[in-house]
Length: 515
Image 1 (cartoon, rainbow, N blue to C red):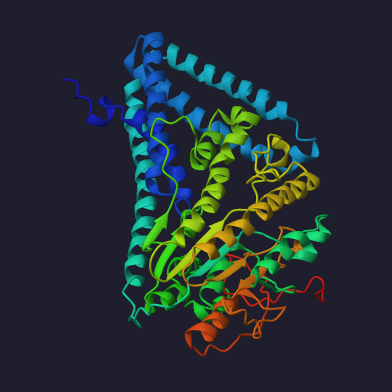
Image 2 (image 1 turned 90 degrees about the vertical axis):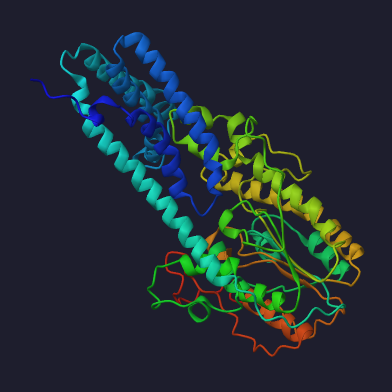
């Protein structure tokens, strides 16, 4: 008497899992960057793709069990090829042989296709009971799905728990009528004036325009850290990370408290205690977006069936067999349209905030002039993808990257002064405005040299000084306008990143003397 087949042999649910897993794995890897619901369209695409392949395989194999196995081979290959291509493109030997695009765009797909055809022929010619392999494949696929599901749920549960612990209402100090609004505007990677000159661009007109509005420009400022995460955490918590964030020594690599300290910072707490509304803008990175502000200003999401790809979707497709297509100019440009639109959206919406009632702390972090080098000086989209073809939008050479950075800088220089004028004009009480960058241009000798400017409503800049760094920005503001007594800290640049955020390695000054 023959023993009946088990459920795992009779139900090949691995086809569905292999189609869903790549999207979930990609979300697990990028959970800090995005809202988890952003994965819905990639999953829909993946499932539709797998079902289409399954129908085709059923037609050609005339055997549903073989069709399931053949579909799985095609699906796994499709969602893996881009990863293989990216590994090749970043390999040392690929650079040494001149980065031939034909190797990745032609030879690799043809070689992979020949292997897939050979495997499919073997399945076609197999005479035994192919369902005997289904149990093992089902178990493997279930493990993959469970591991991604665990990572995603664990990460988001940790985020939610940490948020719940940190969102207890601070003791209010009241809500006086005549407090000034405070704007904290971050221009990511905007370099100090002398560093701009070293790159071949004189931004003195922009600096002069800010000074004409009434800004104080710290001509010798430096960021306290070289990367956005650690730089913003230190600025918003008014101190060096080894002092303001609990940790287990300078070699501690746990960065979770650093990310959390950006969203629930000492600066935010100070303003909340004084009855300020907290207003933040979408930044383009989920980990930079503050949680539960009084008002979160963001673009209207694209409809589900929109043909516009967001950055997550683009990068996901870039890991598939569509990799060679996604590196073509049309798709490269569309990869960064989201950032292009977001920066323009923030600039358009900022002046409107001033018309809202009550004292406000307004925080906006714009990914410009940082890569991607998508802007031209007149504000149009740069159609030459050589300026943002590599990595996260850098140019194909240093020269292209620097010129692309300068183009981004010229654009923001042309827009921001008018935005500030409009904010001041729309404000019932003259506001406090800090325009600052988290670090300078991504070049070792000038990376710390950042933009750092202040607009005080009474024009009293007697306590500011040329070498002030971001850890002292809000210490000074709170002391001068909110009757606190924060001591100013020593202005230093610490040469550590998010991989070891609590280190104390002090960076060398470039140049050693400021202009």
